[in-house]
Image 1 (cartoon, helix red, strand yellow):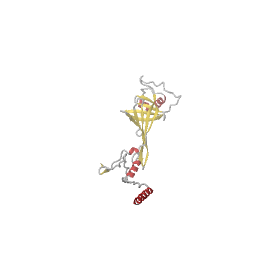
Image 2 (cartoon, rainbow, N blue to C red):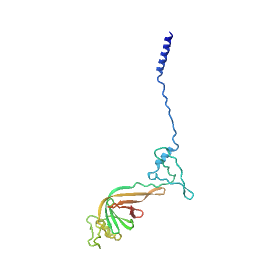
Image 3 (cartoon, rainbow, N blue to C red):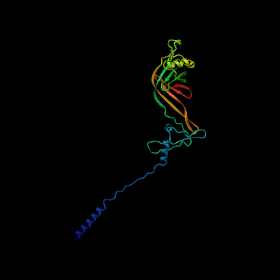
Image 4 (cartoon, rainbow, N blue to C red):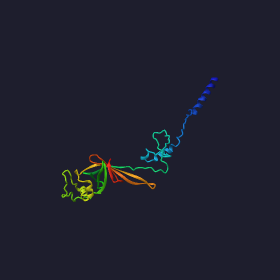
Length: 237
């Protein structure tokens, strides 16, 4: 009798456990604080134009003595750059133009001429120093059917040449160009070359305005020439 009672108690316990289901699983959440200022720092980082992200002016005190302030970086893969001080304009340069263009070139006693197919202009380089000189730009006025050369103009030496076509018309019509360059020392030759234009901006009256830029072009033999609009000059690049 006691044995039957004991078995009944055990059976009731098993049934109760089955109805309650398995014990609940405990999930522990660990919450960590975001580093102070990280969000603001990330926003400041994206607000800085790319050309200026590598440099930041240091504040000065007294008689121009440079001082620096340590900035703690968050433990992330990139390093944020502080934004410039409010009201401090910083110079940004637009992206240069890079392309291949068709040109013609001719070498003279004291310089050379380039014809640029995209603009139809003739660029005159006059050598005034070692690897530098003056730069002049003219429209190419030659038309098919015009006189290509003047048979009455005879070079003083067999090694010297009279330029023809567009170069020749400019050289014959403009006595200043003729005096600056002298006679041609090579034939005119055409080729495709690399060309770059580097625009610049200037900060005036609270805004950026276009400023004179610079052109970079290469000769047939790979010489690099930089043409500077602001000074009307050229130098070897």
